[in-house]
Image (tube, rainbow, N blue to C red):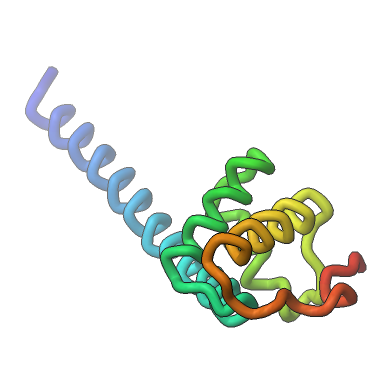
Length: 113
């Protein structure tokens, strides 16, 4: 392998790492926003909001950032996808049973559109 080929390979590797880091920053921001929605909705602490997102992600076999996006868009869209809605409701109910918090939002806010 020539020096030039080595440099090209290294540049490509670094470009891929930069792209992954940029995606991670975006994902982290969305996850933080989703935690905020959960905290506002339930009165739980942010650590518990993080656990709820992880639980929903695992139970629905959905990437965490995708669950977070649905939760962040929920107030605007007015509904959650059918695979996310029951898992989130159960995770919130379980967390409230253990940690307290406010009553969950009214049932009509869980509706489908």
